[in-house]
Length: 507
Image (cartoon, rainbow, N blue to C red; front, side, top):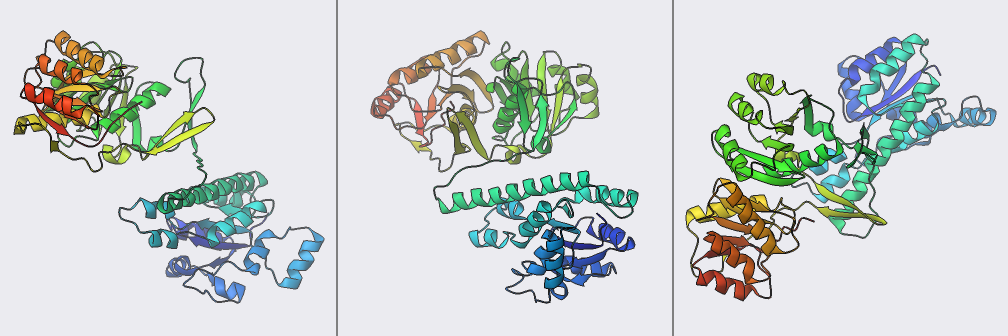
């Protein structure tokens, strides 16, 4: 279909002037609205205001401007259909052959800290989705563009086809328009459902990033959806596997807990060791010393650019993935000698790349929850003895780590490193025993350490085991019916203990 008239109304104005200029040179009559028309006029591109096309003014602060029969009639009437053609002439509908619309930035608006409900609602586009749906429904005759990335394809097709677009292109762009409209409505519904705390259905539509070689195991098929590649850039190595992606996510969430230079090692999404130090190489030594066996085939992450000294240490063991905000040239040269080692650049701060919501599949549906954050964590000292500054720092270090360990979880820590980690046990005392055994295997002493527990100690036995191992202080949520027994056990051993009031179960 030859394009003789275009309606352009865009929120994202990148590239729009050059695109409109190219259309104008091909003799296309351009209709536009508000801010878009102003941009085109500044570029001296001939443009008709929408109000002159509809013979109706923009009203209600611009809320009503394209919601008009002449717009939707010009988009929807079937070209070549005698009845439609006659009614179009009778109603004065001029054909609109191309619609270029991208929507009010609702998603960007609600991502801003402190956004109000009123501000979000003002950024709900009505006319835009209506136009792109009308155009997309009539894609046999009308071309619809919702993404600036498609401008060049439209122009090239027009140049190669005497001002026409192909049915194949129009069909592809129509599908893209419907998907964009669905994503937009879903974002609005999800936001309002959360803000208004109403009962509604949950829906999710994500673009395909890539098909994976297999899933958690080789006999399972798998794919990655969403915008994972916006957060992570693979610089070297094999394609990421299903398990790699899970581990990368877990590692990113963990490292986001730390502001000081820190290195963490993970295996099967569980931390093996975490260390902090101004010298990243020393931070690695602290993390690796926690457990020198488990890191084989693991994931390593740091929150500072990775340099040569750390690269030389890491390359001594087999790792699957290394993640960093950047890799210095010498470090990349060393690490890239390992052909299969994946190097991943974290493209934004870990605090921004972390999970926004947590979705788990269950029989017959999905569970959806907010990401686990400390929220209103207290530091309620419940023992006779208050912790020293060093003990408090050790407790807080352990607390940052334990929330990322599978339940039941126990972490022994100093102020700058983990000493022993017990994960995923059916009883908390067993998790404590494993952490103690791990520290002993690593040749580390727990004397003067802090013990962190992701949930309350249901009995004094877990705390007693920690004290016997050398811990002098403990941090836990509290809330057990036997809290008084646990506190008494701590007092008997001159331990300091803090109740946080926040639990960090990780199933």
